[in-house]
Each structure stands twice: as C-alpha cells, then as structure tokens.
Length: 80
Image (tube, rainbow, N blue to C red; front, side, top):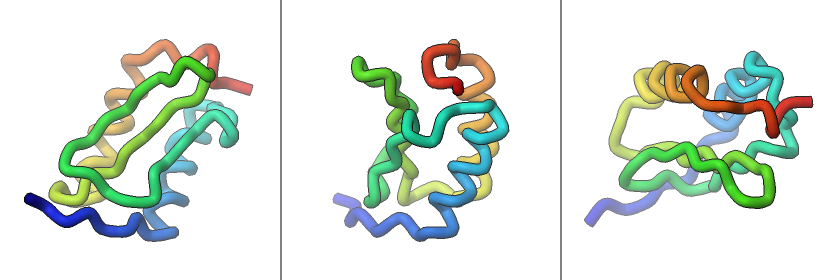
C-alpha cells in the first residue's frame, strides 16, 4: 500500500495555471491536499472539478496528461 503524501504549493499553482489556461474559474477547481494512488479528473454534481494529483507518477509528466484530459472534456460549466 502506498503512503499518501502532501501536495506541494508549487504543484497546486501549476495545476491552477493550467486550469486558468482553459479559462476555468478557480472556485470551480478542487485539488485534494494529499496525493492518491491514481489520478482522476472528476466533474462533481456541484459544478466543481476535482483534480487529484498522483503520488507515484512524475508530476510534470502527469501535468501533460492532465492538459490532454482537460482538452477532451466539456468544461463549459466550469468557465467564467
């Protein structure tokens, strides 16, 4: 079993910079403060987007994958 680690402030800022590039409202983005075993981007029923940072994958590699996932999603309800 993998131990969850804290998400670093610089990682949060990079995720927010990425979501900003998609014109997503920052209040619509939820980033758990602990890493997880997997990664997921989930549209929540309350019109927020939960983005979970994986602990096992290199962050910069994952960030590129996140960009690709977001590009494929309908993000209209999360925009300004």
